[in-house]
Amino acid sequence: MSLEKFTIETVLSVKRWSDHLFSFTMTRPNSFKFTAGQFARIGLSVDGELVVRAYSVVSSPYDETLEFFSIVVPNGAFTSHLKDLTVGTEIYLEKVAYGFLTLARYQSPQPKDLWLLATGTGVAPFISMLQDFDVWKNYQQIYLAYSVRTQEELTYTDKIQQVVELFSEGHQGFKFIPIITRDPVAVLNQRLPLLIENGTLERVIGHGLNVETSHVMLCGNPQMVEDTKNALKNRGLTMNRRGIGNIAVENYW
Ligand code: NAP
Image (cartoon, rainbow, N blue to C red):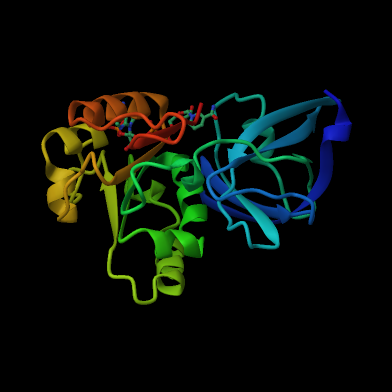
């Protein structure tokens, strides 16, 4: 892999949420541009080889640093090294950002109600999007549903609250819907496709999915993306192709 495609950045902070979830920030060169929802390709030198993986950016396109959210994949070639990073670790950053899980892709329907449905680390691009003023300006309703296995895995709740307080002035239409699937006493503990099929998600939100208005973004576990896509299609929603349609997706592994 050509090293010319990369800049070398430095880790500025590391936050460990649990033994298998962590976030980190690193320096951002002025030349690195991205749109909220896109991912960066970052690399580590492992035994003299550059190993690169895609990571959605958590931070806002206006931030001076870059933030990422990672799971430690057992015996993973990348994350088993990444998990040991500390302040000062050098990380390769590919100079361009990638990905089409961005709100700019929607031409029709026009923006009205936005449904951001995530599992696990798939919440990352949505936190970036919520830090974009255009999102708050363009959508009357914004719903973030975030499904994790346990309470311990429900990360970034403080950040979500802060972002909403900062960006949502005068906006009445935001709802955060945490789902904790392996907690029998959680308010919501069914998987997203079932919550759509049985109408619970819409009931909790107080608003219905609508073919004519809804933009629905899915990010995370590939099987969740597949199953949720099917549940939405059964409700008449369509995949967004060439700008037209309701559903946009990103698989995480
Ligand atoms: P996860 O198993 O993806 O679970 C997170 C949430 O997604 C849970 O609420 C889970 O519900 C739900 N979920 C799982 N399958 C679903 C489906 N078909 N439909 C709807 N919801 C579904 O947990 P994770 O911790 O984010 O990731 C688990 C494993 O995936 C990791 O151990 C790792 O090996 C792998 N992973 C790999 C990468 C990579 O880059 N290679 C990245 C992330 C994760 P339930 O509790 O009901 O299962």
